[in-house]
Length: 233
Image 1 (cartoon, rainbow, N blue to C red):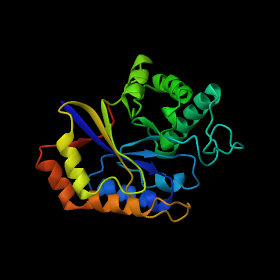
Image 2 (image 1 turned 90 degrees about the vertical axis):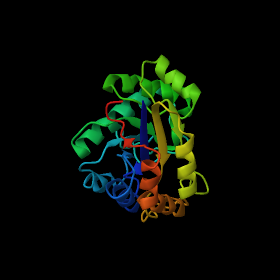
Image 3 (image 1 turned 120 degrees about the vertical axis):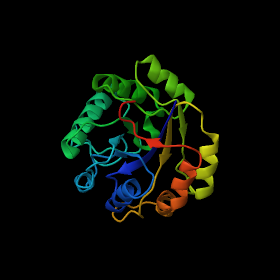
């Protein structure tokens, strides 16, 4: 059996991004999102969360720490296991407080959990909270499962100089999917950030247009595919 999840990263990152993600979920085909809970716009995003499948987009590289508000998180990241465990717990608890329910799953902003120490620390908390964690490659998948953490069986998606999910790439990827297992497609739809300085704006708008298009839904139905969320994985 195939469980196909189309997850939009960065809910809560910026008001315009959050608005686009909510639109992509309510009017388009996006089936899941993950939320940044330590940005200045997290509460604004939470006000749009009703009825949406939302996990935690654990952020260890930007904005302020939740567990230690005096600590500014930077692109250098934090590699202290105790801090990562504490911060992951704090961000999960803040998500529940913001939206009134627990996270469906957990993934990590900028894929910072490629670092083995971060991955090990996150695995500790994922087991405590009984949460699945996104894996982006076989090595990460193996490490998570060895730690007793549930994860996806396959992963597709990029965030580079050009938009990943054009209509053409969407259709091509659907034709390449495994026949079974939990498969996550990572995406970044949204409107150009209005508050955060970012070079990743046009890409978001192109992906948003792709997933709002009737052609995206038709591409799924013509292949007999349905989208799901991480809830229950």
